[in-house]
Length: 127
Image 1 (tube, one colour):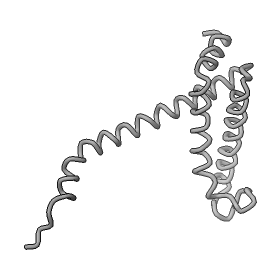
Image 2 (cartoon, helix red, strand yellow; image 1 turned 90 degrees about the vertical axis):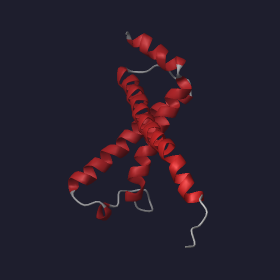
Image 3 (cartoon, rainbow, N blue to C red; image 1 turned 180 degrees about the vertical axis):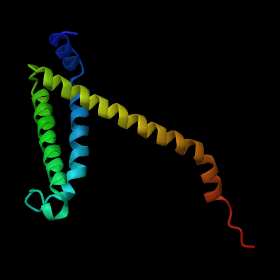
């Protein structure tokens, strides 16, 4: 597929692409926000070794990239580089994996639901 064809795929899927990018950012923020201080700076005393601090910084930098790309798409700017197109692809992949995990868990819930409901809703045994 050419770069232009890939751009067309993103254009034709603008809203889902924006949602996928937002999902990635939300997950990164869910992981990293508790490790920031009140001013939004990395609270190094909460983290531990330097490698963990470096990893946190990398995650926050990644979130910035996804945020900028999301804003770019929201403003209708589809002059995307191959790197940006790949970030959209990674965001869709993230969502695909996440959804498959959720579907698997919901399938387990559905299989257990009848038994659990029966047990929880049964009349109390006072014997």
